[in-house]
Image (tube, rainbow, N blue to C red; front, side, top):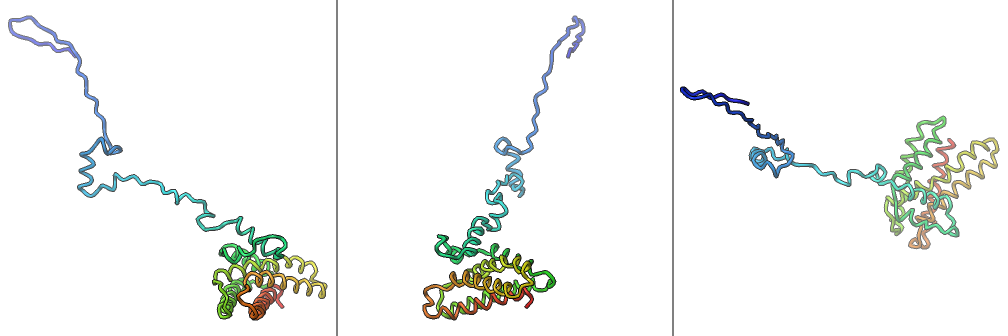
Length: 231
């Protein structure tokens, strides 16, 4: 930029130069330490929450199965313990009773309900009802007889022990025309399920009272099977 300065009686002098514009930076409040006046102003006006940065909570990033407390390996191990109840196989079967869960037994009961749905849709809700209240009956009877079990433990064991009835279901469809063989398969399935449940629920604390708890467990699985077969 050049400026001309005129004075009367003097020569004309020209002054040339440049004017540097100062750098202007806008601070939008991203760094509170560099803009203490804006921070103080917002906090005095009650808008300090605008300056807060929410930190990610590591617990919010858990997998869905962990959020729902579903352990697939634990459920698979319990299924093996129920399907193979022989002590000689070396499974720690007490984990089914001592570490009860809800989702595994519920899935098994729902699966049993699904295979029982053929021609009799209403049995689905009835099977779930029998599972809940049948387990409650076994729990109350066990406590009256002096057993140290919780309702959650009974609910889990009774639910998992439905697996033998699910295993024999396809066989009954194939051998439905042979009455004698079908009856034997039904009895074996009921004994299998009742033994799996009774061996976990009926401990040494019952002593001579074991039949008083084994018998209603056996009847419960007979009733479950009758809901499937319709007999």
